[in-house]
Amino acid sequence: MTTRLQDKWVLITGASSGFGAEAARAFGACGAKLLLGARRVDRLQQAAAEARQAGAAAAEFHELNVASTPSVEKFIAWAKAHVQSPTSKGQGLHVLINNAGGAHGLDTVAAGKDADWEAMIQSNVLGVLRVTRAALPLMPHDCGASIINIGSIAGHTAYEGGAVYCAAKAGERSITRALRLELNGTGIRVGTLDPGLAETEFSTVRFKGDTARAKNVYAGMTPLTAADIAETLVWMASRPAHVNIDEMLIKPTDQAAMHKVHRRKT
Ligand code: NDP
Ligand code: 8X3
Image (cartoon, rainbow, N blue to C red; front, side):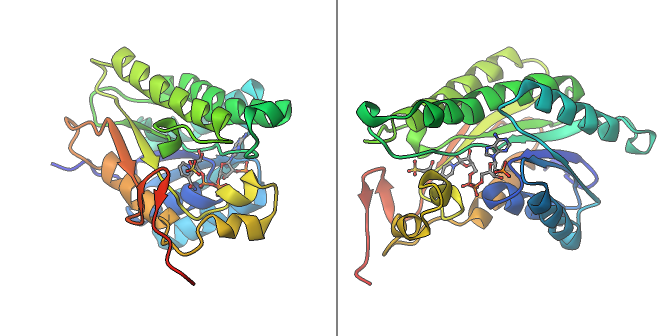
């Protein structure tokens, strides 16, 4: 029997754009109750409104910087007040999606910048650890709860200019694997969804606002969309409680491998 998401609390980090905002809509369409976090609160407000429009039973949002332990602790205290409120019937947090992250720069190691390296490790690695550590006590055992981390094809294959981002996503994969071992016996499912090229704000952030360069990443090919990822997240979280989707690599059909992308002449 599939796991029902109706009226279940779903926490999504990085819900202000891309995969996270679209996941809010997709879980909202299942009637879930959403807890959304990111640094841009105006964008969270928009994502929450769209999720309610899609059918969310609730869509709450709060500022979150996963690079800061105090910010994560404040955010999870806020989340706890929601999931343990008397009207919540003691359900707890049913789905945790560790999505916040991204790449900063495409410099070689020789030309790398400390600030970019630190931002990537902070959000993609330490952010996942901080949020998971704080949220775990809110998650019920033996009823199909899920932790789904967002990895990347970059965690499977290194590429020039991607040393730290690739290392960060490979780290996310190892964290996911270790956590699955640690939580064995609790009934909490642990998985990673690892996308290839997907057109979101990812490349604009990587290239520090250079939208022309960002657009060029997807030139002549059909990338994944945020909706593709959101739909897959809902599918993973709604499998029967005894089914754990460990690791899923999802790529555009035009991307046969990291370095093999078919591009049509435009
Ligand atoms: P976006 O740039 O559209 O979204 C990134 C999200 O992460 C934003 O909501 C941003 O919110 C949030 N975020 C970043 N840093 C922090 C932080 N320190 N604290 C809190 N929130 C943060 O890109 P995507 O939707 O594509 O990216 C989502 C995830 O998917 C990332 O982990 C990315 O690495 C991964 N990914 C992306 C792929 C792609 O090709 N697009 C492919 C594979 C994986 P805000 O700035 O408001 O804080
Ligand atoms: C994002 C995909 O190939 O740009 O994780 O690293 S890629």
